[in-house]
Image (cartoon, helix red, strand yellow):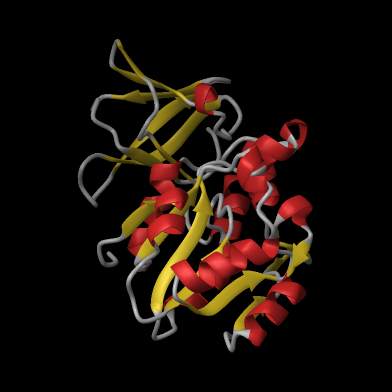
Length: 263
């Protein structure tokens, strides 16, 4: 388990900043925190600087191009839990909006340099920011170079001849390819029940995932490890339909990890 992690909203970060002698920062939606994301996070965490993640409550696609937006692999609480376990010191969460989208790339990077005490930036090679995504990795690298701040542009992580991406993970989970999805994630596929509505029923409880637009495996019965408020899980079987998952007793399930595909 990592150290205790602070969480700030973007407005609070932009107004007051953070008091530390220097930060290593990485930026992204980080939906799934797959092996490609881990390559960014590991570089930040292996530096001697204060490790900071700038992320989003929802993907900017939900505001900019809602017709292309897909379901989420994980919820916000799940993402923050994994960041903390990895050892991230601070996560700044952006509630992406039309107003935020008008921020220029230079304004965004200036805020990281000033409010975030930026000393080292880690981004993916396909990262873009600023109004209409006009600021790419090369331009960000040049901006930071002028301020004497190194920027590491990390190439994509490849698997099976293709780039590891959140889209690939979503496609694998949706098709029931949980072994493939786990290989891309570097850990088992899981569902965290924090923030989901629960309906008790005979012998268990039903969690609604559709209302939160969460990606799910196809309907069926799945062997899982079920976790309550303990790091030790118990093996059981759950049922999934198009809208959610039915968990047998105990009722106080916190999350599940899928062992493999459906039965």
